[in-house]
Length: 242
Image (tube, rainbow, N blue to C red; front, side, top):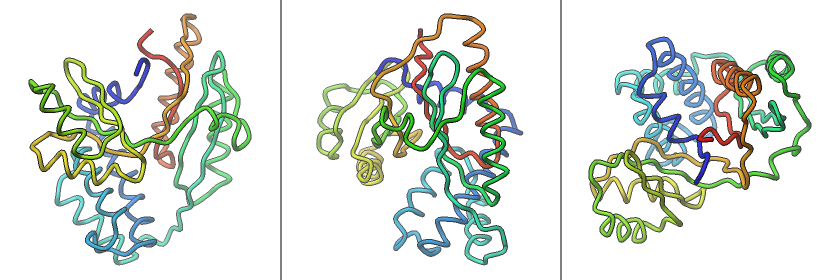
């Protein structure tokens, strides 16, 4: 999966500063608010909440923080009403970018998105302008601590996954988007250490950047998007490995 950014994201997560971790906690807390409002505070009956708790743990959110997030969400203490919005556009040299946001002020968030794209060599487009280049798949990242590849293949097949990739540090398992939690639970039950498990948007093709200025601007665009409190996820088709 050349250019796939998820492994790079895992590496960055391990090196995250305290302020970056606090921002991750804030974003996940916002997801808890929406998830509990839509499906209730019981993870046994709210599958999305169960998946979100697993996501929080994979992002190193302490159990105490998760409990506080759940209580806050269940109590309705946060009066803000968050709405999901998707923004699409192009970064430098035509890199396709999709931004998923949860916002309590659409005008503010849309203004921020337009500013980032304009400032760093891109442009914000209309809905659908780049999403046709992506397919939603479940992606599970597993730490490779000396995997027995033959056993791993058998376990992945038994779990109902679609495909897998292995490198020296990580293994990546691909699933149908609605199967990601079931496959994660199956692999966890077989003793694998899950670092991340989410449904994501995977690009059909990738764009390589060779111009140093374009690379600099693309990095700044991603940095500012990911730093925005309203932004939950950013997907792109930049081949970062070139």
